Length: 403
Image 1: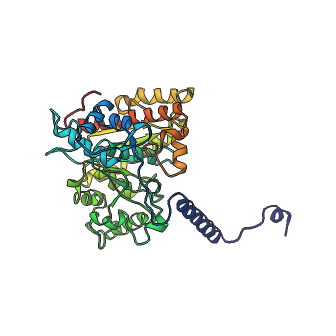
Image 2: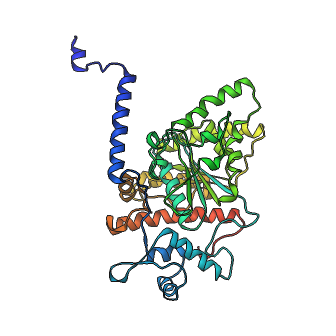
């Protein structure tokens, strides 16, 4: 053995080493999940304080107390010192009670009305670390809490969105169950058969795993054979099967501009591009936009529908005290104007800490964090998501009052 081999011994076949590491990591993650959630247990969403429920509903806490005393709507759980707590189902039931007595339709139930188009929002960027999955998850959950009927689709083979919602792909999706099953070219299954309920009222999910890569492998062969099967219509076609059941579809796209992403973009009514305000990330986004424009131009020429209600850039992991980031945000706003969302998603330890336990900030208890840290992060998330909800309402020809 020479000196180099003594200092850097060979590890053997890389495929075996990677396989061993994958197996060890998978077992450790499964043990971690079993510790957080016992076997056969499903994640459950916490109950919300009366103040949180009132804020979600857009009413005063005193009015919720009045409804409770009058016996209207669900009865909250009463804890120490008479504090009232509401489940997500309770909040939805309260929405229905309040909507029944509202002067204007949609005051408390903001979803689709007759004639409204299903809103399909694709969240995209092909650079990792842009906050794409974090954005998708918090947007889907906030819209569900606000009364929209939401279908979330994890189109990323890495399946981080699925993991946040209690699915560990290599254990929970052994027999399929991803969107690939519905969009594959041979023997597709109805989309309704693979949609799963989540622990969030109003939020269903189509989870993801590595099976999604089969679509990337099969599509070039279909194209080479000249089969008259347009890959870019696959996602839109299956969404049409369930569109009456939902107000919104939020698609967490993979960090690449492949056939899955292009099919999702073809099905979309809106596009949200996440971008971290640093030079390398913005340069990467430039390449993404150039490639997207060229490829979607080809799709449009082939008959794909490339009309969108809106497209916006969302600044993520933003640190207001960082001078270079501020310069980059100003640079983007000077070029793209109103296409950059007014609000940015702040970088926050609260969001990162919640992720350690596979939760979002909407799931965790405020008491787990320093009050100022939690409130700063929550204010940022709500501002971003409510701005997007305003865009959804505008696409339906209306805007919510009071914003």
